[in-house]
Image (spheres, rainbow over the protein chains, first blue to last red):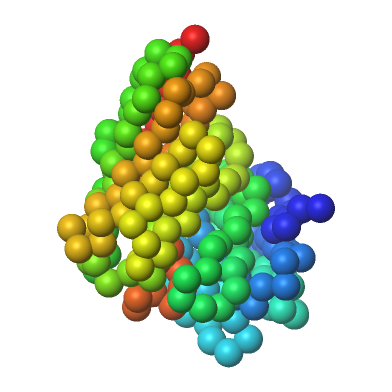
Length: 113
Length: 113
């Protein structure tokens, strides 16, 4: 069974559209994350979220918003897509706590045309 | 602000060689350090997790060390194989990050038969 899953795997869309990427984890973790990997393969945190706290990387445009219907899901919604949003987006999860390991999903490759 | 640097950026070795990948970080206030492997077009696979109180972790042919005071970690791969070819990412969890990881840009490893 996949521990952290994302859908879709590939997403091609036009500028100005609104899209969502879904993430689900079956590990029972209470903290989830979204990371962005740019064209140079550099991974940066976008959000970390548990049922108590949302921490947003200050560089993330407010067109991006995480939405969590329950503890096992953290979806990423993007409004008014721009060319520069093209990247691979990774979801991850961990138990809350200082020393815990993060588990990553397979990634969603977003291409904005 | 925590910065993570990985050297070298790319490495090519013949099969069977032992090799060392280096990771340095600027702020020693971390909870842990994690080494990942990323295959082309794929997600991240966690290789080793070292807590801030630990000096090293081993898994099979992999050994990772941590010198928190000097801000350095190494990943040692023994008897390299072509299947080890991938990008290796180092990530630290800073104490002020809200549990998110700060990644290096990775070392791209090619092991030739």
